[in-house]
Image 1 (cartoon, rainbow, N blue to C red):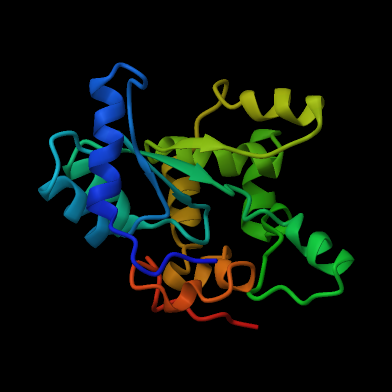
Image 2: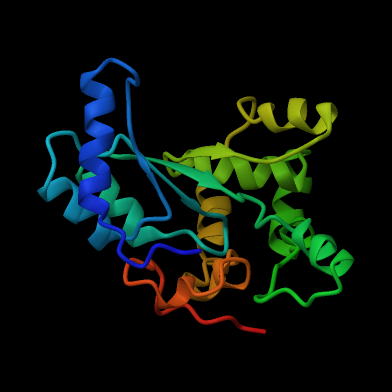
Length: 201
């Protein structure tokens, strides 16, 4: 069941109490939009330390990044590869993904830049986000790929590389985590952070 009477400010004040009690050092939010973050900031003693959101080369969230930078809030990017494994997940369930989930590893621009630097597409995708000042948490169950994901500090993306990667941003059309297919009724929740995002499939 979904609580349709969520009060984000009251929840945040309860989290502040955990800081006061010494139970946690930092508190943040996930999947909040700018208005929601601003509301928390304007009605709290402790502003969010971090916001965790979907972010990748086709969904770069420029406005949110600028907003968070202005307020001294760090960003953590989940799904930096757009989580292409979800295609197989949906297939096993006999379902069609609610939105298009791209295979960024095979994108010609990313492949070209990866070949140029003798790196993998995954490394280019991670490197680009870190260049934007974003923390990145790629998912992997392979120890080899986990080690590879750390190997991004021995090369530099050129201004041309960065310009080409910036051009891949699709804005709101690039988001892929459409949660209402799993949480029925979430799209009707008054605190749904993304009411304007409609499935593309």
